[in-house]
Length: 71
Image (cartoon, rainbow, N blue to C red; front, side, top):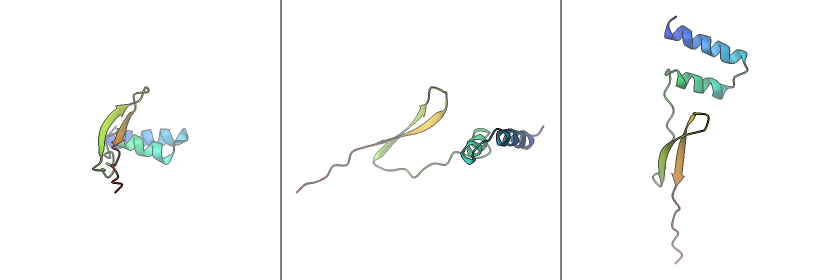
């Protein structure tokens, strides 16, 4: 089977099991057909890659507190 056929089969299997649009998007990203969208980065944040107990990779954003000048 070609990679395209494999992807088509995986999508068909996912649809049979009731996959949502988000599930299908993640399947296409995992298969390497589409890159993970990169959210707009906040200059006041640090970004890390996290891993859940299930092994799923998730992005982590650490937002730094903003100091407010109370003059």
